[in-house]
Length: 208
Image 1 (cartoon, helix red, strand yellow):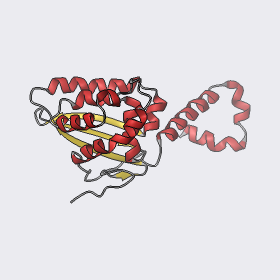
Image 2 (cartoon, rainbow, N blue to C red; image 1 turned 135 degrees about the horizontal axis):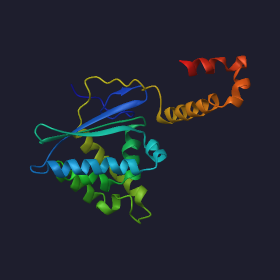
Image 3 (cartoon, one colour; image 1 turned 135 degrees about the vertical axis):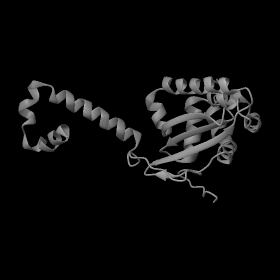
Image 4 (cartoon, rainbow, N blue to C red; image 1 turned 180 degrees about the horizontal axis):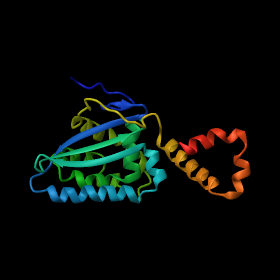
């Protein structure tokens, strides 16, 4: 069955605000260990990013799985923004050079490289470029990349996300509110204020 493309999730499925993407690549013979190291560097680069900037892209999670005795690679990611801005913002925030680091070890890189050349070369898509037209170049050229990703994508047979109704900003805000409330609960000076009947629902949640 052919997956229907949607504005929200592209070719993937959606649960609440979260969409899934699972793209498959063929690993170049003999490149398994280089690919594994590059995938790890990609994740380390994401960890170095400002969390607020990463959240702004819509990213929920990402993982690479090498399987079939090192012959195949699965790139699976979930996101909460729409498909088009997710891909654009991922390149703008992370830089395509970090995607190219692992993609170059796949057979599909030949097609990807042709797109890179058409888009002005790797330097034009790299985050650290001094080109003032960097963002404009990226947004004008990603249609080709999105097609390549969707050509290698398989829609999930089913998809469930228990936090699918919540965005990352909501999750982060809830964590901060919980930490602040716990700090208040631990403060003896707050005991009298917390005895007010209006705060009973908050105390009930804290005790659950």
